[in-house]
Length: 416
Image (tube, rainbow, N blue to C red; front, side, top):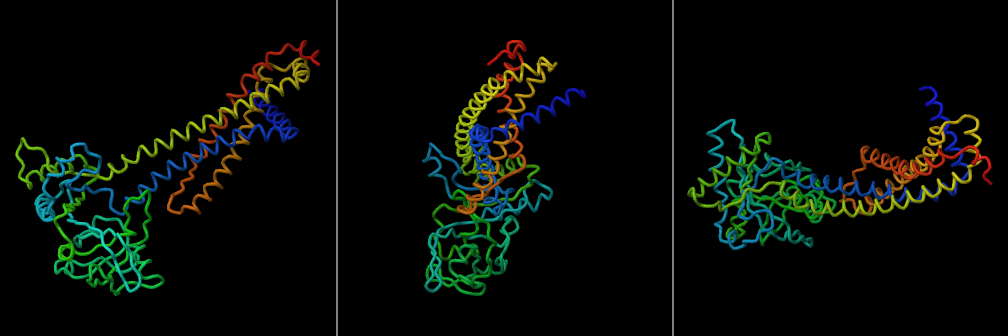
């Protein structure tokens, strides 16, 4: 064991001495590995960034919510079947809450009605168009994880009386009230004045997903007064116990069938959606990035490995007499094998570290140019990149090292 430790230390010393003696050649040889590690790291960063971005965008809406809607959150072939379904009435929320109240400890917790439309908000000379406008109850903050930057959500009294009050998103507030607080100020929607009672905290959006930043919320009774309610956009958001997700979904489906008075032989005429559907729809994007990244990574690492193998063969030829001398003095085949293998691995590790530093720099550039894209540069990603570097070194250096270890010392000493 002591001999093996000595051989490893000596092999590392010889490897770095050779790298220092041939700096330019070693740097050019490691370039392929640098490119490969940059590809590995950026690919992993992109995939993790997509996951983090989706989680961040959906977090404000709660990850323990089931959405009862007319349409499914996926592509459908039998469009007319869904088109002919009757609308989801927001009054269903009260019936669901009565059911929940009569069964404490069940998997369902709270139902919140919601309707939606698109509107233009105006304040003086400032205007924002196509703002996702939500009509809902005062219970929405109980199921939403979005925080308030300032102010509050509208109260139960304001909701029941249909007051002209509104909560706006961070970006909407910034566009209509640049550099000043919007609390207590008025905005106009459809020629009606609404008093701003709250502004949501900045959440950020990703890949076009909805975000509170560009939304507005008002009492449902107010919404009904100014917006058409015949567009089949009503929905019920139902909070559930995540530890009993399957039970909650089954109970909600049975309850909705009873509310909609469906017979045993009739199909569901409603849809129960969840955020997992959105994540599933984004899987092809992640898979596409992964496939493209793996192809580029594999190609660049293969080219880098060929370069390292070629240079290691050259190094074996240049040092043939040295190998013969060492063998004549009693060096084992294992010692020679370790010497050249460690040299190849060392070059790859240097390339890997350089690639990680370059990838970190490029990630910072991406973060500066596209602040909405989350950058996730984790320790696990660093370890994966370094492991790939080591494996590339072992793969590319083993054949030349094996050839060096098999040299006949007599033939090697006579080599010119």
